[in-house]
Amino acid sequence: MTISPILPVYRRTNITMIRGEGCYLFDNAGKKYLDFATGIAVNALGHGHPHVVSALQSQAENLWHCSNMYKHPQLEKFAQRLVETTFADSVFFCSSGTEAVEAAIKFARRYHYRNGHSKKYRLITFEGGFHGRSFAALSAGGNAKAREGYAPLLDGFDHAIFNDIASVKQRLTPETAGILLEPIQGEGGIVVADDAWLIQLRELCNELGILLICDEVQCGMGRSGNLFAFEHAGITPDIVTVAKGIGNGFPLAATLVSERIAKCMTPGSHGSTYGANPLAMAVGNAVLDVMLEPQFLLNVRQMGGFLKEKLEVLVSQFPHIIAEIRGRGLMLGVVLKEASPVDHYTLAEKLCANGLLTAPAVEGRVIRILPPLIVDKNHVTEAVSLFSQTLGTYE
Ligand SMILES: *Cc1c(COP(=O)(O)O)cnc(C)c1O
Image 1 (cartoon, rainbow, N blue to C red):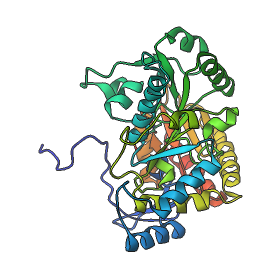
Image 2: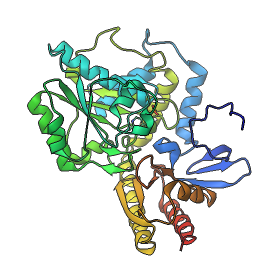
Image 3: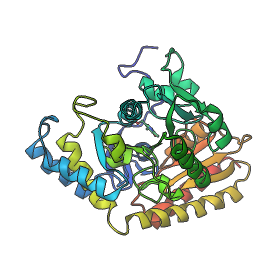
Image 4: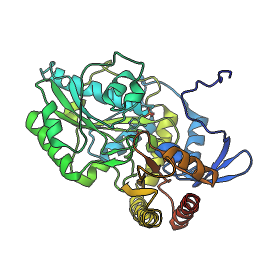
């Protein structure tokens, strides 16, 4: 076997994708796939959304890059809109989820440092959590396989059990700076944080003067049926990371912060060459135009409800394969039984061969269903029927 020119770090299929249109992808043989994976919750508006395409095209004709030494109309507009529509008072732009998380971790340390508590540097993070692949993000994450061979990792992360307040309290020390979590764990297999637990975490942070950081890279930007998944619990975090859906496929990410965090940052204290790139800002504005339309989130909730209902019928039809359906909005997980005749990777491959793209989770026996947020009833019905046909081959 010869080594591939592309570093073999992905489980890549042999399918060559060449075109996307709306909720569908097309391969080089002309075969059509219903895309309920969206490149892992990225193409929130589907493929080739005309408004986003034209925003990128016209920006490409004007200015690609000018660095953060200058103002730019798309940047000012995008930051202003994010501040107006979210809890945030200030925004840092970068190009990937990992970078947004890295920034969040640095900002948390910097906040305590500037407030005279430089000994507060540790974060409580969670088993099953995923925050990216940099050293800080890996150290924060809870997946052993992703960390294999990279020791020593960074100090400063204490892993607690998700949805378990006692476990969080056990890991508190005078050095704890904050709590970092995904309101819905994505790679960890669509595990939803209990609303009551999030409220307890917020109260704990208030009591101790520490920060609540939500990693909404996967579950944010409308995917859960609210703009952010933490909103379901009615809480307000101090720092929130977003990426994936906000760029719809263009490398764009952001770290949103409240005023007391923003006040601790000064010129030179953080940065990114590509961050706030005019192309990315133009795309971000175009994505927001669509997401902030009044019916957008309503569609996510309605289609999410409809999809969950239909998938639950599959649980009763194939009780030997499926254990349960979980998740929120259009971020759903089909959990396979321990004794299922097929594992989740093989099932996802079969679904793909039958024309339905899904995203197997890293942990648990879970197939993630992450459709474009613009799906309609016909797409949902088509997806569930492809799922049902595929499951039928394992009777
Ligand atoms: C995907 C993901 C990341 C990492 O984002 P990249 O863009 O791959 O760097 C971080 N956090 C969560 C919750 C994610 O799902």
